[in-house]
Length: 164
Image 1: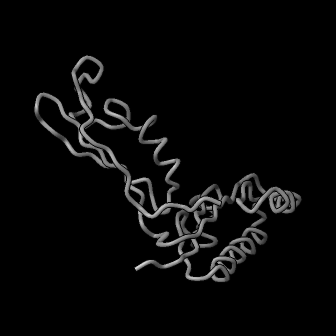
Image 2 (image 1 turned 90 degrees about the vertical axis):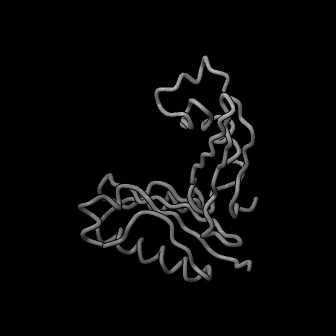
Protein backbone atom coordinates (compact mmCIF):
# COMPACT_ATOMS: atom_id res chain seq x y z
CA UNK A 1 0.00 0.00 0.00
CA UNK A 2 1.34 3.39 -0.96
CA UNK A 3 1.68 5.90 1.83
CA UNK A 4 2.76 9.49 1.32
CA UNK A 5 5.43 10.40 3.88
CA UNK A 6 7.65 13.31 4.87
CA UNK A 7 11.31 12.51 5.36
CA UNK A 8 14.17 14.46 6.91
CA UNK A 9 17.77 13.31 7.08
CA UNK A 10 19.86 15.08 9.73
CA UNK A 11 23.62 14.89 10.27
CA UNK A 12 26.69 16.88 11.20
CA UNK A 13 28.66 18.07 14.19
CA UNK A 14 25.45 18.83 16.09
CA UNK A 15 25.23 15.06 16.60
CA UNK A 16 28.79 14.53 17.90
CA UNK A 17 29.17 12.64 21.17
CA UNK A 18 29.53 15.78 23.33
CA UNK A 19 26.50 17.62 21.97
CA UNK A 20 24.43 14.43 21.77
CA UNK A 21 24.67 14.23 25.56
CA UNK A 22 22.85 17.56 25.66
CA UNK A 23 20.01 16.75 23.25
CA UNK A 24 19.82 12.91 22.96
CA UNK A 25 19.05 12.89 19.22
CA UNK A 26 20.77 10.62 16.69
CA UNK A 27 21.83 11.64 13.21
CA UNK A 28 19.97 9.82 10.46
CA UNK A 29 16.58 9.48 8.86
CA UNK A 30 13.25 10.45 10.39
CA UNK A 31 9.88 9.76 8.78
CA UNK A 32 6.64 11.65 9.50
CA UNK A 33 3.04 11.27 8.40
CA UNK A 34 2.50 15.02 7.95
CA UNK A 35 4.54 18.01 6.89
CA UNK A 36 3.54 19.67 10.18
CA UNK A 37 5.05 16.83 12.25
CA UNK A 38 8.30 17.10 10.33
CA UNK A 39 8.29 20.88 10.73
CA UNK A 40 7.73 20.55 14.50
CA UNK A 41 10.64 18.08 14.74
CA UNK A 42 12.96 20.46 12.89
CA UNK A 43 11.80 23.43 14.96
CA UNK A 44 12.59 21.46 18.11
CA UNK A 45 16.12 20.75 16.84
CA UNK A 46 16.54 24.40 15.84
CA UNK A 47 15.47 25.52 19.32
CA UNK A 48 17.99 23.13 20.87
CA UNK A 49 20.67 24.43 18.52
CA UNK A 50 19.86 28.01 19.58
CA UNK A 51 20.22 27.06 23.24
CA UNK A 52 23.52 25.31 22.51
CA UNK A 53 24.62 28.13 20.15
CA UNK A 54 25.22 25.78 17.24
CA UNK A 55 25.17 27.27 13.74
CA UNK A 56 23.52 25.17 11.02
CA UNK A 57 25.48 24.96 7.81
CA UNK A 58 23.17 23.52 5.16
CA UNK A 59 19.46 23.43 4.56
CA UNK A 60 17.51 22.19 1.57
CA UNK A 61 15.04 24.97 2.35
CA UNK A 62 17.22 27.51 0.55
CA UNK A 63 19.80 30.23 0.93
CA UNK A 64 17.61 32.70 2.84
CA UNK A 65 17.00 30.16 5.60
CA UNK A 66 20.73 29.44 5.72
CA UNK A 67 21.69 33.12 5.89
CA UNK A 68 19.24 33.79 8.71
CA UNK A 69 20.75 30.96 10.75
CA UNK A 70 24.36 31.87 10.02
CA UNK A 71 23.77 35.37 11.43
CA UNK A 72 23.59 33.81 14.90
CA UNK A 73 26.80 33.46 16.82
CA UNK A 74 27.92 30.13 18.16
CA UNK A 75 30.34 27.29 17.79
CA UNK A 76 31.67 25.95 14.51
CA UNK A 77 29.66 22.71 14.72
CA UNK A 78 27.04 22.05 12.08
CA UNK A 79 23.46 20.89 11.95
CA UNK A 80 22.61 19.85 8.43
CA UNK A 81 19.40 18.46 7.03
CA UNK A 82 17.78 17.44 3.79
CA UNK A 83 14.03 17.29 3.23
CA UNK A 84 12.25 14.94 0.86
CA UNK A 85 8.75 13.60 0.59
CA UNK A 86 6.93 11.00 -1.39
CA UNK A 87 5.34 7.58 -1.31
CA UNK A 88 6.94 5.05 1.03
CA UNK A 89 9.97 7.17 1.95
CA UNK A 90 11.01 4.56 4.50
CA UNK A 91 11.86 2.03 1.78
CA UNK A 92 15.58 1.56 1.15
CA UNK A 93 17.12 2.11 -2.27
CA UNK A 94 19.29 -0.91 -3.06
CA UNK A 95 21.73 -1.50 -5.90
CA UNK A 96 21.84 -5.11 -7.15
CA UNK A 97 24.35 -6.88 -9.39
CA UNK A 98 25.03 -10.37 -10.67
CA UNK A 99 28.66 -10.81 -11.72
CA UNK A 100 30.18 -13.84 -13.44
CA UNK A 101 33.70 -15.27 -13.71
CA UNK A 102 34.53 -18.71 -15.13
CA UNK A 103 30.89 -19.78 -14.91
CA UNK A 104 30.50 -18.78 -11.25
CA UNK A 105 27.85 -16.15 -10.64
CA UNK A 106 27.86 -13.95 -7.55
CA UNK A 107 25.03 -11.69 -6.41
CA UNK A 108 25.96 -8.48 -4.54
CA UNK A 109 23.94 -5.58 -3.15
CA UNK A 110 24.61 -2.11 -1.81
CA UNK A 111 22.07 -0.42 0.46
CA UNK A 112 21.99 3.31 -0.32
CA UNK A 113 19.66 4.17 2.54
CA UNK A 114 16.04 5.16 2.54
CA UNK A 115 14.47 7.50 -0.02
CA UNK A 116 17.70 7.79 -2.01
CA UNK A 117 17.16 9.58 -5.35
CA UNK A 118 16.97 7.25 -8.36
CA UNK A 119 19.21 9.43 -10.56
CA UNK A 120 21.92 9.47 -7.89
CA UNK A 121 21.58 5.71 -7.35
CA UNK A 122 21.92 5.10 -11.10
CA UNK A 123 25.05 7.27 -11.25
CA UNK A 124 26.50 5.43 -8.26
CA UNK A 125 25.76 2.05 -9.89
CA UNK A 126 27.45 3.10 -13.14
CA UNK A 127 30.43 5.10 -11.91
CA UNK A 128 31.09 4.44 -8.23
CA UNK A 129 30.17 0.81 -7.58
CA UNK A 130 31.37 -1.78 -10.06
CA UNK A 131 33.40 -5.00 -9.86
CA UNK A 132 36.84 -4.12 -8.58
CA UNK A 133 35.77 -0.67 -7.36
CA UNK A 134 33.69 -0.68 -4.17
CA UNK A 135 32.21 -4.05 -5.17
CA UNK A 136 34.35 -7.15 -4.69
CA UNK A 137 32.15 -10.17 -5.48
CA UNK A 138 35.17 -12.49 -5.81
CA UNK A 139 37.07 -11.11 -2.81
CA UNK A 140 39.50 -8.27 -2.17
CA UNK A 141 42.56 -10.16 -3.49
CA UNK A 142 40.97 -11.07 -6.84
CA UNK A 143 42.56 -9.28 -9.84
CA UNK A 144 39.58 -7.55 -11.45
CA UNK A 145 41.72 -5.75 -14.02
CA UNK A 146 43.13 -8.85 -15.72
CA UNK A 147 40.37 -11.41 -15.31
CA UNK A 148 37.35 -11.66 -17.57
CA UNK A 149 34.67 -10.56 -15.11
CA UNK A 150 31.25 -10.04 -16.69
CA UNK A 151 28.27 -8.18 -15.33
CA UNK A 152 25.29 -10.42 -16.03
CA UNK A 153 22.63 -8.07 -14.68
CA UNK A 154 22.25 -5.00 -12.50
CA UNK A 155 19.21 -3.13 -11.23
CA UNK A 156 17.92 -0.71 -8.61
CA UNK A 157 15.02 -1.24 -6.22
CA UNK A 158 13.36 1.13 -3.76
CA UNK A 159 10.97 4.02 -3.32
CA UNK A 160 12.63 6.95 -4.99
CA UNK A 161 12.59 10.66 -4.32
CA UNK A 162 10.22 12.29 -6.81
CA UNK A 163 11.53 14.97 -9.16
CA UNK A 164 10.79 18.52 -8.05
